[in-house]
Length: 194
Image (cartoon, rainbow, N blue to C red):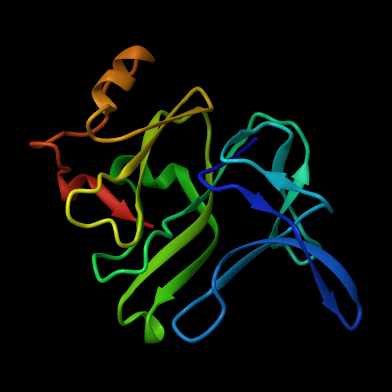
């Protein structure tokens, strides 16, 4: 199954040798990297869980979106936000869980000349096993009080919340809070940027 924090649609890309369909995140250009995932025609990934899609691989071994129901959890996450000087977009995981989270593909975008205003990341990750964890996404331009989005993962289900609602979320799904909350902020030592 495939979780995304954005709505994504496939686009046809024309080449001399034929047409392929891809979902694209990130940007192409100086200080930027485009993340493209080959997929079936008319693929629509909605924000949230997409049980009918999963990740396979191309003939060259790159990840691709496939129509397939399985119990593996993959996440497409983007930290693209506003075009401001108020901070870079980052995606973080808990240090203690990082060895069970594999980055399969990554891209990024940049605001201004090669990111002089700011940058943001996008990743395709695989969460191995029946992992209970939290993924933190801070969107670019989200400084000055805009909370990070938190994606709580338990039993291959993903729950979206913020620092203000994380304790209520964990209590509702009967999960112990996996990190310390310090006056509505995070202990930076507990998090690893992907």
